[in-house]
Length: 318
Image (tube, rainbow, N blue to C red; front, side, top):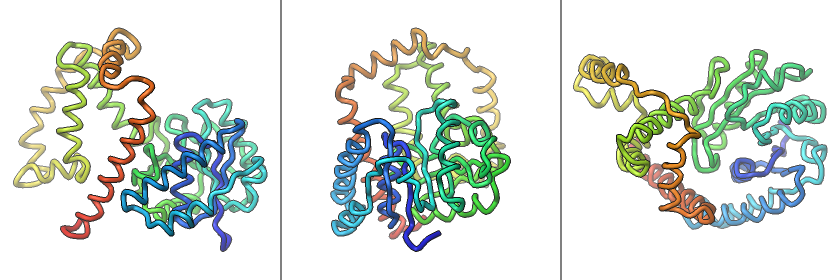
């Protein structure tokens, strides 16, 4: 990489602007490009608030905020955004035809040594990089939203992604403070969305069957499982929930889980009456026009949790 590390953010919606904060905070010069008029200006305006919230949450010092903001630059064209870039983070809509056309341009215009990364959460990298001359430097770098607050990031290679690219990508995202999930090969949904899909599917089933309400599902996660999952994953939870560790846990509770899985409820139509019920439950608690305000509330809660986890790690360890 060049001495001045340049990141091109291509697509400046919610994910793109969060990545921009992440890279700028990490010392990178960040160029923001979006083909839709006004989106970059809106992103930079939102980023001002995001940086202020980081300072208010004691996750960023005021001088560092000003330095990060000075590194965020609008780009007038895709060519201008990519010039001299060492990293390209693509955040285009989840439509294959858009990805394929855009990635041909990225591969043609980006410096040959640049890593080309996609934030896609649903499209396998092989589907939009197969015909690229520089396809060995392409991969998916999939965050959870918002990536400047959620540490976990997945690296999913295409079959032709080079090991050098994977190692460089891991070095960069770890340098930004992320925890890395490195997939050995492609799989639909990657890791985090497959786990999420299993849980959300079961949540829909329980509501559709009338077992509990949508609000009670949120309680089960928010005030139950998520509390321990926020500092220990399911395998560590199992390891700690039996005197003899994970093998003892499986011996003790395998029959319980097998009984649950054997009694699987029928799959609901997510777009059918159950969606009406869940949407009604949510709108009783949050009007649609209040969603942006609640998103900022969510981010502030994440910041507080992030600060707490860092402080606790310093006092009692990871």
